Image 1 (cartoon, rainbow, N blue to C red):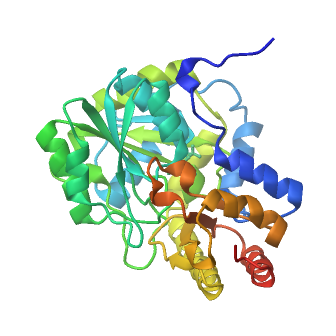
Image 2 (cartoon, rainbow, N blue to C red):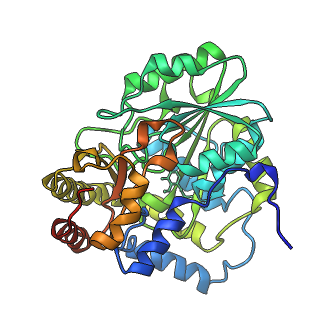
Length: 387
Ligand SMILES: Cc1ncc(COP(=O)(O)O)c(C=O)c1O
């Protein structure tokens, strides 16, 4: 019997991360592809999870998340951004940011509604906009600077636009939207009465003087902004999938209305452990960012010395390179050849684009340990990378 997938999945390929990580395992390649760190998060957070399991926090957590975590998230938003939130009505815990994205789109987008989204996009956005029946309207961050063009943003908005789906710090370009760029988003949202869903999972992972500004802090924006984040990147626990949505009660309630039917709840013993991290280890993510910045430089300098055009990212785990200087026109072809040629895996940026803007772009992760990055660079330097 052949199984026909429902039309809501038409044309959505398996996530590129599964494909490339499987390739890394099969070929024994150094995985500079998928964005997960090699090192664990803070010991006290891991201990808190073990303690929670030992003390019996092993049954369903409340659907909106355990109170200690919702309170810790509210304190986090206040400590870092001066946002005052009611932990009962303006915070909901989700199964990673990924479920927050899914629930927000399922709850807020009707079939035929348009969603304006930054391109390149995190690939779950495409899948979930489509599953919600929405239509994506990409606004491209273009090489070499990958800045947001306010005119292009304005042109993407039309009568069917329901919401803007934003991501800053931005995966995969490493762009951290400036206050002026965010103001352009706010102006459009206010003028056209749009909602904004903003994915801020890399909120603490910024470099140099590129500080993250949450859109919700701009004048008039709190009321129309749903902010999504998660513990995965900030505390190096990507496998825990503890995320959250914050904002006005109506938007947070919308997320809960959908998420209660997706997973209902998640990771009961992990939630108090994340609360401990937010409250007791508030400086840990910034220390991680400082260490990542050094690894960014190691990777970017190494890739540049191989003749690649490198975009030095302002935040996140990732650096983009243009491979045309090595004679390649197609990032997918390059990335599929790379494990054989060099014993390294990277991620093509094509699957994150509708347009051809990503055809020659390849993403490399520097959230790996120094010796892993060095080994990857050694292998690349020893290989013939030209087409
Ligand atoms: C932009 C972006 N949003 C969301 C996620 C997923 O977050 P979580 O693991 O909390 O579901 C990722 C992970 O790579 C990401 O890069």
